[in-house]
Amino acid sequence: SKRIALAEELRLARPAQSEIEARLPPVAPFNDDPRLPGLVEELRARLEDRPDDLEGHILLARNEAALGRFAEAYRAQARVAALRGPGQDFADLADLMVIAAGGYVSPEAEQALVAALERDPTNGTARYYAGLLAVQTGRPDQAFTLWQPLLEEGPADAPWVAPLRAQLPEIASLAGVRYQLPPLVGGPG
Image (cartoon, rainbow, N blue to C red; front, side, top):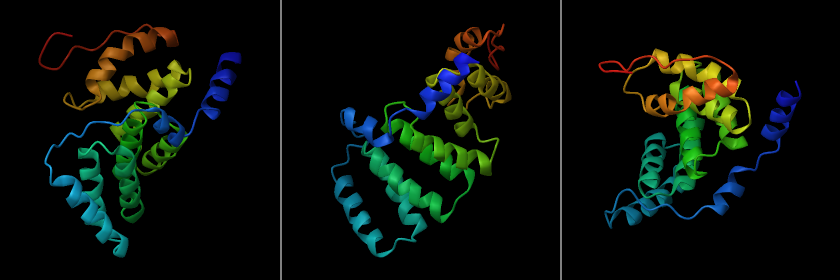
């Protein structure tokens, strides 16, 4: 019970998204089209007059991310989630926030995960990041409980499968669980 209480203190005392972002170096763009920054600025200016333009905010989030501007991307994605609101929009918001914070699940990203899982408890992205939050706050038992079924449910090509296969054995050990990875679909385990 002491370990669980300490983990909860750690979870509640973790730094805010903006604090972590301020410590990180800029990310290089994924798209080197020299026209893209200007087009994104033009789109952002147009959206100031059209705050309810769902397609515009979707496009802005995608292209801000392509430019490596993940804080701007998640701000645009937050507007997408507010306008449309299914679980996947909130999972995408959390994903962009975690990327912007260099892999850290902030309290703000946790709020997006809660919103995603309230809307869709089966969302794989949200379940993966909820498990990562548990790992980061000293709760490998919770991470294992979230990740083990996520890995076994698949699909085999989901983006979280490789990280789960890499991390689950150690997480299981830390959680005090004897666990063997299932074989890879279509190949040796």
